[in-house]
Image (cartoon, rainbow, N blue to C red; front, side, top):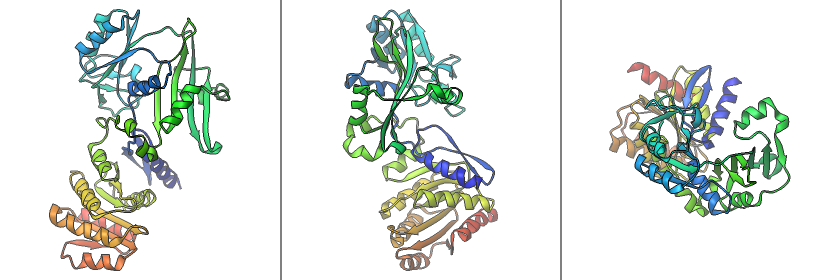
Length: 402
């Protein structure tokens, strides 16, 4: 039961941000890189807010230390804040491999900005939300620092229980809202009053969440969004081309990024048996049964529906490029997927890529008899399986024989 719940949680992680998740299967701990959907840097989210008339700090973006220094001078601000731009939280408490501590720094001297930026750009920043080796910082944001007399947390997010967006606020802003919710849940409340411009932005960009932490008030009474994060409905990509063109894939798994080009959903794991399936639920079951037989999944790659032969070929090319992969298990349950298309794609990939690792195939469903004929007459060393349990057992056994 525990494994099932954990696998369901990991499946939900397919639509999460780029942070690492953990998948627990049969008491085995495996690190998973979930499918990274659109995730913008802080300065990109602030730019969207700015374009919608939302008040944010004046800021510039820099890719070099000299650009950062020039930006600091151009701001002509009493105080300047320099922020490393990576897709992870906890930057302020992070550490660079240059020795610099903190991905967020305040200074009143513009000259210091260039020096600090030189210790950020090109170096890895490690926080509680990054891999242990950290993430390379390629961009910094140079912004005007403002005094804050009052901080609040504010977000608009889609809520299934309400069948629409809700507003969430807390008088304790500027800290992890999850910690506030756990320690003092009475400080979390759903706001009734609209913050119009943020709500308009929420609707305009098809957001699933607009989060401002903190939403601050200056001593002069100006309300400013000091930090910003926006999540998007990826199904709306077709009408949000400008927003999705901002996607920065530099921090994502290269295999994951390549898979997305072919509408394939890829999740990397730590094992050596590649899983090639159609459907997230089937993928999780496949991972679980491989583990049950003593094996470890190297990934799962979800074909989805409406698959074409070129996608099958691309999938095999991605899987065989992973040096960890010692065997491939294909597990297709064809409903809307034509098994014969899968079989043709498999045989083409095996021949053209000169497959060197054992291949176990389990096909069931639409046009399965034609698919099995294609495989059996191909003359390729493909091991057929009668069901999922049989397929997992044969894949594990194939590695043991090597």
